[in-house]
Image (cartoon, rainbow, N blue to C red; front, side, top):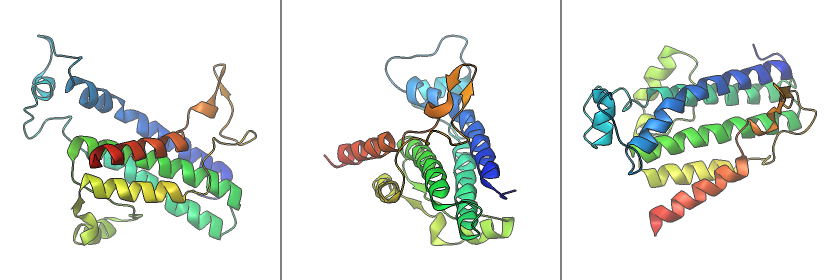
Amino acid sequence: MYRNVYDADAAIIGLYGRFLKLAESYVVLNELRADLLTTTVNANDNLNQLNKHDVKAGNLYANPSTYYDVILNCNDLLYHFTQMLANKTLNQTQYNMRYADVASLRAWVYLQLGIHFGNVPYISNHIPSVSSLETLMQSNAAQPVSFNVLLDSLISVQESLAYMDPYATGTDLVTTVDGYSTAKFFINKKVMLGELYLWRKGRRL
């Protein structure tokens, strides 16, 4: 699957497709539990629980699995991009741009997990098989970490990225779709780092 830069780009587009599936959960968890939105008589029990801050087991929105689905896909891409660099099927510039994009997207998803679920496992490993997952679940790597520790880990990775700008013009991922440039479709890495800084500062005031 990861034979050349075009395969890498196709994997990134597929990743963003999975990422879009978080939209409903993102809106509901962020807005329905705040003070500017409320439920109507048509709302189901899952929504009413969130609105009243009285979430029961089995609530469809109190389920981090969709977030971890995106995270595990990010880990898979990052692993294979590193393999492609080693095999010279990606050059250093191509690798830096794509790795930074996927790592930043993973940071955003992890930030949402920390905001909504508090202590969560921070998994950055590539998991190629069920047996690998079983081994991971039995290790310390699968143990939940505090939100503060999570923020420190995310910031450390984000600060280490070799590329922080948007995809360069001429890159296959920068094109026009329905009259719109795709250049702004992808996560802004500098903004992501800034948001992590703000959360860490706010947590420690």
